[in-house]
Amino acid sequence: MKYRNPIIPGFYPDPSICRAGDDFYLVNSSFEFFPGVPLYHSRDLVCWEQLGSVLTRKSQLPLSGCGTSGGIFAPTIREHNGRFYMITTNVNKSSRGFATANFIVHTDDIRGEWSDPAFLDHEGIDPSLFWDDDGNCYYVGTHFGEKGQCIGQFQLNPDTGEHLSETRPLWYGTGGRCPEGPHMYKKDGWYYLMIAEGGTEYGHMETIARSRSVWGPFESCPHNPILTHRDLMLSFETMANPNYVEFEGTGHADLVDDKDGGWWLVFHAVRPSKSQLHHIGRETMLVPVEWVDGWPVVNGGRAVEALMETRDTPGVQLADGLAEQGDFSLEEDFTQMQKLSPSWAYLRNPHEESYRFDRGLVLTAGPDCLDGMGSPSFVGIRQRQFRALVEAELEPASQDRAQSGLTVFHTNEHHYDLMVTGSGDERNVILRKRVCDMVTESTPVALPGSGPVALKIQSHKWGYEFFAGTPGETLRPVGQGLSQLLSTEVMAGTFTGCFFGLFCQGSEEARARFSRFRCQYITF
Image (cartoon, rainbow, N blue to C red; front, side, top):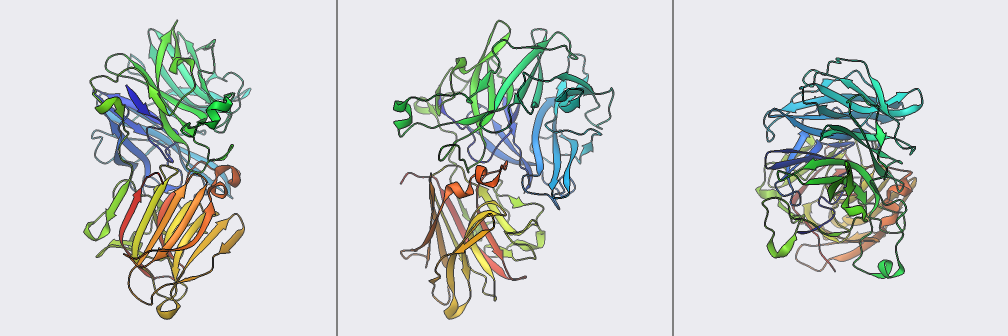
């Protein structure tokens, strides 16, 4: 079987996976975006459909005051006796400090609503659940022991969050910083504890240890790390190949078996646009696993590649021998819709009165803006690939100081906004670029005094080009921006990625009506 990595491209980090019969389910971190915890389904591990999100109610996921890259960290999904559980952490990462709230939600209908949270009295992040053969359930997550950060464990009631034992340290890892992202498995009488180390940057790695007891002691795998690209050396021929895709920051993994006894590893990695610069986010990957002498060997010990060739997934026939992960392009006719599709996300908890369908998607500006830390009138989709054509048509807001249009958004301090301002003879389109504390605006491009406006973004690996004009006519260039200035590394470290979004701001109660949106991933 041949398939392409990433299997879920774009800002979909910290993947966790489980199997229920013939079906696989996968979740990702969502941080300050809402709804929380995207939920995917597949039957072949390669082609994934987003069912929706786990946390769809503000009562499940309050994000008011949530800082950049706060919110939902590293969820885990598991199935036990027909019930699905998702455990995660809501991190209040703001100027006031760093606080965590670990909680569990569950559902008996994977396509339905999930319960309200059952909170756990435990600090730390990256929680996971493990059921032993006797039915006992264990929490595994980060913990601070006598020697510093480690992986800790306690027994709990997964439906109530009640602790049934004290927390015990299990393993400090192999010496890499930030031991985190743990998952426990049982195979052939061994308990396996797999963790991430090295930090979720370019030194990321995955390591594993085993024990005959769920409480340890754990012995480290002799060929740790079992997955890393931290020391990957590329030949000049490889680097000169225009079709080569570089993956860095590999780690935060989860194991799953298929119905035929094969094993697979999902994890995240980044695709740099330039040397050690990435802006799309950490993306979900897949590689096969073999067990040799009681230890997992990931991808035959080889580096992860974009085009993978491996054993067939069970019971799946793929056309032409190549699995396409699905068409991630999106085309929306908002005039025919009453609700947004699962791909769309808000920034923190949305002001529901600011969004409605009335002959299109109507955004009403509120008190917040893209530069702030609130919830602006914004809705966006994750950028999935470097090359994209993004188009929108709208009746822009016409109030004084109102701004509406298309944005490439990473954080409140890093975004490029193609926005329509003014009205009548003063109607213009401007490219406003915010990078840290620097703001620039392009020379205004005049628009006709009335009628709809067409906006377009062309993205490529190194940047974005912006256009505007009248629908059906040749659009005029407005400006351009470098992707490197929207990179995580420029922001002193964030955990998210770029969005293509629609917005309306600047004058409260100003309204913009978007009639259509298209995002097509192409080569040009």
